[in-house]
Image (cartoon, rainbow, N blue to C red; front, side):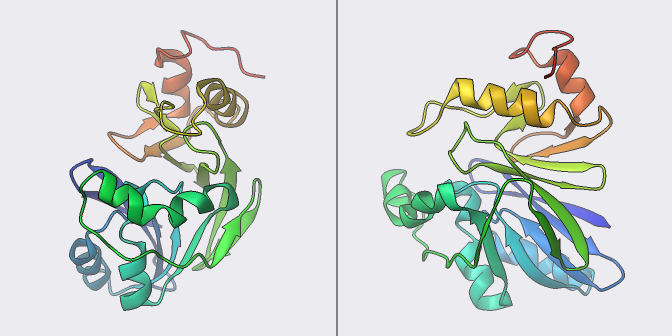
Length: 212
């Protein structure tokens, strides 16, 4: 498994391309809109992109979905509770004066604890509401793609509509901090970290947080 990171847009969203070396197929975690950068990696490794696994529906994470669907024929997955954000993509882009793009088609709604067997790789879906109602993380082997749920020494913002700080903290404590300390966390923004590091050093939880 190869993981390549692309930072996209003015909000520096991390898009992750995960490549299966055996089949030469790939998936992307979130797609912020830099198609040329994605295409360059696909050509560099001679792989076919098959799926977009969205961690949530905010515009900075899904603005590139439609173009990938049109040009690469990929399928787009997201949690049902964030369908409304996909439907509001156009209005959100206008509100934040971002370049306009077309709304992607949702091919599948993922569910909590579902196992996705895609592109010869296995991802576990972990529903972590709080940043958005349908926020999810994707776990593969010893790697967690956390979207905007958990960051290095921080957590996702909850001041946007339908966000909930208490719900976010509960999601992290009960679903993420119960994972092995050595799990590598690849967040939607910023540097990578580990579950163990965040349990010890994340200021939103205090030192040596008790998990349950």
